[in-house]
Every structure is written in C-alpha cells, then in structure tokens.
Image (cartoon, rainbow, N blue to C red; front, side):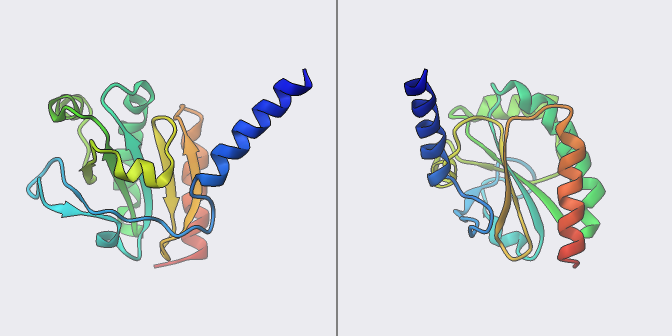
Length: 168
C-alpha cells in the first residue's frame, strides 16, 4: 500500500513541477489563426496584452470540449468589454476535423492552430481540455484540467476576482 501511495505522489509531484503554475509568466508562441478573416495570419498572447486571458487547449475528438465551447463563447462575449479574451489552441493534426467541430460549435474568439504541439509542450498539457487563466500582467493565475458543468460558476468567480484586483 505504501509503495502505491509513494508512486502516486511521485507522479503527481513530477507532473506539477514542470507545469506552469500561479505567478509563472505565460509563454507566447505565435500560431496561425484557424478561422475568420485573418485565417493563416500568426497571432499570439501578445496581441491581447493587458487583457485577462482564458487560454484553452482543445481538439475535435475531446468530449468535454463540446460542453466547454458554448460556455466559453458566452463567457467571452459577456466579459469582452471588461477586457477578457478567450483564446483556443487547437491540436488536431487534420485541420478539416477542427473545422467540422467549429461548424457544430461556432465561436467568436480566436482559434489558433498548433498540430505540432509546441504550445501544449511549453505548458506541459497532459489532457484535454486544459485551460490557463492569465492576468493582465501576463502571469498565470490558474490552471484547470477538464471541463464539467459545475466548473462554470467558479471560472466566472476567478475572473471576477481578478477583474477587481486588476481593473482595466
């Protein structure tokens, strides 16, 4: 029993030591836009400097992403005027799968394409969806794996709290 606990603790600790955590500076790797009038143009976090960013890593085959996309689109539209942006990084190798997903779950926020996995590697993403909340100073203040209905209220609460701490 002890060795299983030790093994589990080591795995958890190993995963946490390499992941971006609170107060870490967000990593920006410009990536091509997937959709919209600027499709193909490189974009990154610096294009949204001074905003609170919900950075979402997703793929078309991700079940919880189907739940998160409508919520994230509403979140983005409700908070846009307050200086909040959602940026999604798609990890599909086949772009047509990502585009088909977006036909079913259209969004108003930027979708960047990273089939080589440079950004998720830099952020040590271990599952999808994984999200990072980044403050106006460009520092990570929260990391979240997965998405469930019950996550909606506390995501809003975290953003509201950061908006109070760092007004526009």
